[in-house]
Structures are given as structure tokens and as C-alpha cells.
Image (cartoon, rainbow, N blue to C red; front, side):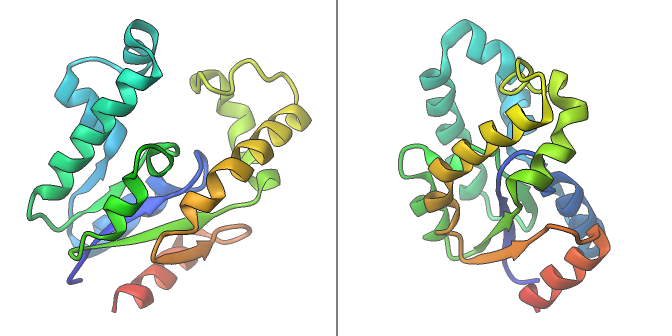
Length: 175
């Protein structure tokens, strides 16, 4: 693998599951940008949002994204679902020659099914009390975010596919 891989997509699309699998297969580090931010800031993202607000968080997110992508590392990196949608982050990402960006495209119905059971651990969707409300929320969000996600260099549809099948497809892209 010549380039590092950056996984982009909505929460629940499989960035972590797929990223960890690819990283393990390639003997590379897996870096979750949200975890990286929390380790650098010595606090949780929820607390940053609560204490300082979203704009402050998005500025910190950009700072840490630049810091991470400026390192000459080979890794599989998972971005937060909103990361590509703020400032010129997606343009910054796709201009990086040592990185391949991959959008994990997943339908609102599949995302809602995956996220409903764990919604209480995700502040953005914890208030939604039905599968239908969650799917509608996700569909609206995806409508806003898709133009950014589609700028990724590659796309992969994850609906009805196992992690193993997706790993095989990603490895073909990286070959």
C-alpha cells in the first residue's frame, strides 16, 4: 500500500469496523480522528461541544486534521462524519498526494438500523425515539453532507455487504 487511506462517511457507515480490519490486514496503525483529538485535547468531544461549542470544536478538528496529515505516516484514518463538511476540509484532504480518500456510502435505512440500538451513546441522535424519526433525521443530514462526501477520490457502497467483502474491495482499490 503506497498511500494512506482516509475513510469518510456518515456515522454508522462502517469506518471503524472496516478501517480496523484493513489496518490489521496491512499491519498499519488505525487512527480514528475523534480519538486522536480527544487524546491531544485531554478531554472528550462531548465535553468540548458542551463547554466550548461546535465552532470551537470544528477549529480544533481542522488543526488536528492538519497535524495528522502532515506526518509522513502510513495508516488507515477514520474521520468524523462531519469532518469533510466544514471549512475546506474535503478539498484539503483530496489534495494530499500521500492519501487516498474513500467515501463509504450507506443508505439512510441501513444507517438507522445500525444506529438505533446505540443511539443513546451518540449525542447527536439520542433524542430520536423511533426508527422512522432516526431514518428521517439521517436522510436530511445525508442530503446536506453528500456533496462533500462525493468529492472523495473513491466511493464504496456498504449496504448489505460484510466487512470481509468490503475489505476485499478496498484492497483491490489500493493495489
